Length: 236
Ligand code: UDP
Image (cartoon, rainbow, N blue to C red; front, side, top):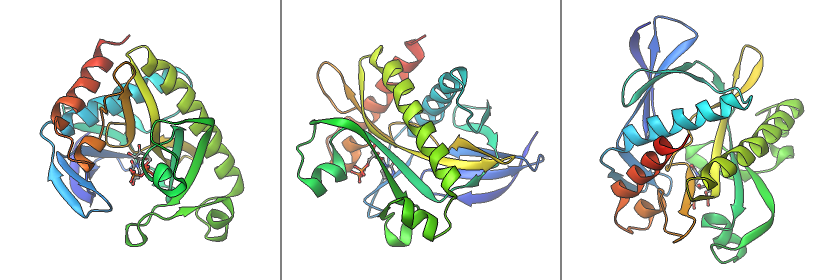
């Protein structure tokens, strides 16, 4: 299999078609954006960390029966994945209050939530990915009722598996974003799971090991990303 033409360029990744119509190649970039593209920058080595971190976690999830788009890592920053039709919904799962939830509902960051919270956002940059509920998703034909139920059930399972896995390497999973795709009539996990898309806090010091270091100009961004990857590689 070989990559052919550039198919899509996003904020953090390029996607190339390949000689196999059912496969695309994802290339992770060091480019970083925040606040819907308002803040732009580079994080040296981010492409490598996000590619390897995401593939590592997808492999762990696959071992536990979660189907993902992962096919094969082909270089430090490039991976072959199944060519899915992305469901235009971002799923956010929250264990601990942070970010937009803390702001919107005035719940201090770090407050444990009594139950895991799942939110849907409509994946639309022009609108700034507005939060929606199941009814909006159905009214806009973003997904079917059955697909929404499958997406919710996989998301909660991913949360349990990730939390348990990360706790062994002293990382608290505060919240994260997932995207799903349609492939061969099924819903499978797509996109990435990385410090760009999750809030990871060191479980002892509560130090932030994720994109909030970039968003909030906390410094030590590259080191935080590398720390997550090295802990993952050291894990079983
Ligand atoms: N997130 C993401 N992409 C987005 C929005 C959110 O990956 O477009 C992730 C974010 O990194 C965090 C979680 O989803 O881990 C919840 O984000 P939140 O709604 O608090 O928004 P933020 O504070 O990131 O703007």
